[in-house]
Image (tube, rainbow, N blue to C red; front, side, top):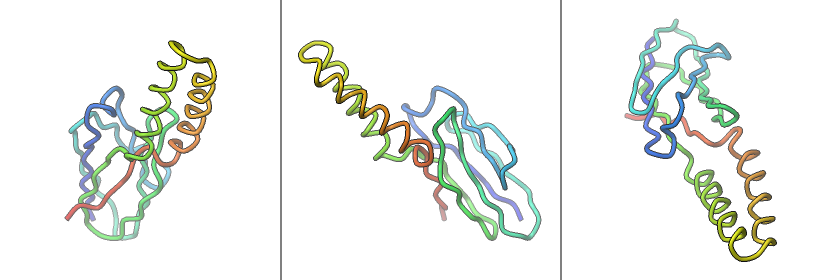
Length: 122
């Protein structure tokens, strides 16, 4: 069985390489728009992507598949909202900066398992 994995995270996810884990073992690192093929046995495997403290949920793949690594838009919107609140808070009101800090914590906690999405592509 072979699994073809492509990273398609766009501009926001292009800073560092994404580590790909197969059944808990580090297999490859992917840059933006890079792909790799993983040859495995006939049993089902679990894929996971990780970059620093951001990660993805595990995806179980039973047979040959094309998998794409993408950024979760909800996590990205949380991050952008935190950045906007931080900038506005520094210029206008400290309370908005406090909201930004809370949003950053929420973003880090949510992003630890939901920053990336592993999607089977046909």
